[in-house]
Amino acid sequence: MAKFEESIKELEKIVKTLEDDDPSLEDSLKKFEKGVALIKVCQKELETAENKIKELTENGDTKIFDENSS
Image (tube, rainbow, N blue to C red):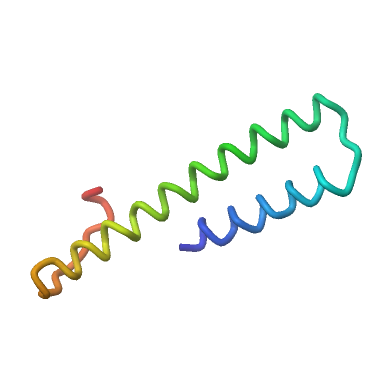
């Protein structure tokens, strides 16, 4: 889950920069584009976690989760 936490921290930095600084339009667009990419990383990590939870709780039984099968 390190990717998730790192992406969230980077998103927070981007938001703070956009709120506190006065970036140019070009810089704002670059930061927005980076933010969208980070959101996609977070969504993928959350999907993986959700799938793992579903597999682990299916029929009340636990089974081994294979990250590469997603």
